[in-house]
Length: 126
Length: 401
Image (cartoon, rainbow over all chains, first blue to last red; front, top):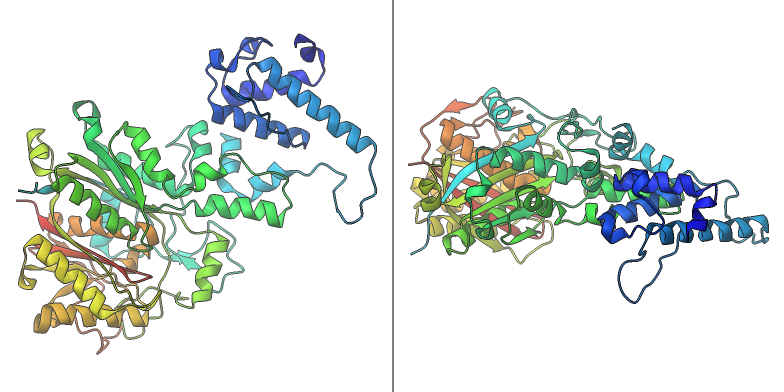
């Protein structure tokens, strides 16, 4: 799992997790469990949303038989990196699907939302 | 024997000011909180006026994490609940016997912004807090969380009577001995393009001002804000030496079972009579009625007909005013804000005015306290809420003994 941290994008993912969970980056070790760090599920959900927005990807839900979606920080980072890999390979080989007007540029979804949402822009400023 | 119920806390935020002292000063001065819409782009609205809280800045009230979770309506609810609960030491309460009942506070601005980004801007995803911010019970939950109140917590939905129903239920649970204290009332923040366009379509909004009972009245004006009361069993309040602003005397609830928008004089009269019966009062005991008074042609005419049915010949001289002329129609919060106004009227011996009154209407023969507040020795006040769908709630309050 610690291999995931070698990826150049890992640091950005960890920075988003640190920001959304208010947990020091140094504590976000690969084997650190979400439980032990005391991360609220809503904070983790918010972190995933911020990553989706930052990387313009949709991070699929991981279904576990027991426990939370991700047991450790390393598992979360690895899942996001795997999603990024899949997205990159899809984007590298664009299939001609004229019926589906998929934009080639990443859509600035959050920027749009913030522009239309006074609270969101205030949060950003705060 | 049922417990008597005291009002031991008041909180408000509206176009008339950020707290109860500001509200009271505005009622005394007959100040109008209605103006051109400034918090959103109103260029597509047929009616670009409202009673907005234009200068509301949530940042001093909430930290960044909290704010992410709070629709504007929940923000209003918390600000007003904080004021209502100030001076109450929660640590001294049996928190399982303390509840929160608020009118449904739909996260209109949260949902409107989310759907705009989804449909209008092709957003790939919505903020994960859209659901918890949008749910109509969120404001009640946040108030319970803020004070650690562990008793029943829920939201009532009866359109523009929602907050009045919340107060009636809160009082009922205290009377029945189920609870010691309930934070109740309502909050509403509906000034967003989607919802105001929907109101435009109903053709009931006034393009210039809210002039209840005036012959030239032209419709209602939407407002926003919150009105929160702390209701408490009188014995509990006295035991802890609480300030009692007024007494809750009774409530009358009922349905027209008639039309989804048109009001019914019979239904409104039934609710007023039920409130008087519940409060063990005669019509002659009532000194002031805070009217539903939306300033639509039909509402005001119908409400006055209902008053005639209940108060007879006395109606022509009865003080009946609509504070909506100042703070607008705050929809699901209206019954809460107007209950606060009614309690202030009793406590301050004040008849709040109906402002914008220009011309007597033969269909509205009452003393609407035109344009200028007056001093009066008030003992009993009614607060009327007659909602779409024929959902009627009348609250009776008495001056603190």
